[in-house]
Image (cartoon, rainbow, N blue to C red; front, side, top):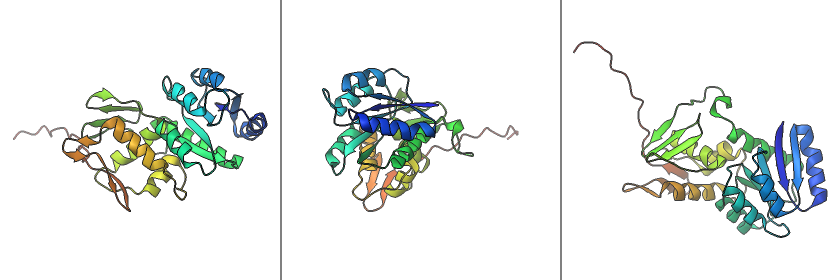
Length: 244
């Protein structure tokens, strides 16, 4: 059973979420203030955190900042409907996804399932998906170990950033549309004015560096999507052993 931490001061909503998520095989722990939320979020006891922006005491953003300072646990932010600024700030600070209030509990379940799929080890994902490391330019991504190296140095990325980078590296040299990235990485279609993919791309650029040599690393193709501009390194083949 996967354990979910819900940090929200709305007690009735927490009770409703517990009732909805428990039949889905999810064990729910609820916390109603930010300080306790940080403590539990850093405990390592949970597969995912559902975090409300509006909390008494410290805000949800501060909770997220402190959790991200010591844990890579996936975080789903709950934001006020129509408040695009909160969504963008949360994503920039390392949230994996967001869900505007009020929401259908079934939609929350769908978002949680999508985040869980991204966080699964490579060998447990869809059959036939190659688990060998991918090397493109100065970046090496290992799906099995779930590590990213840039010029030999480890790069700390969230689960959604890892999934996004993997898609871009596998398609290096080819434009991938925002809609395709949303389906593969977020597990959902993009809604109008949804900037989630754009913000995650911005985070990757910041962590990996905007340039590789004289070339822009991840290029925006206006009206089309994004392209990881470097070419993927060919697989090294062993010599045939015949005498020349």
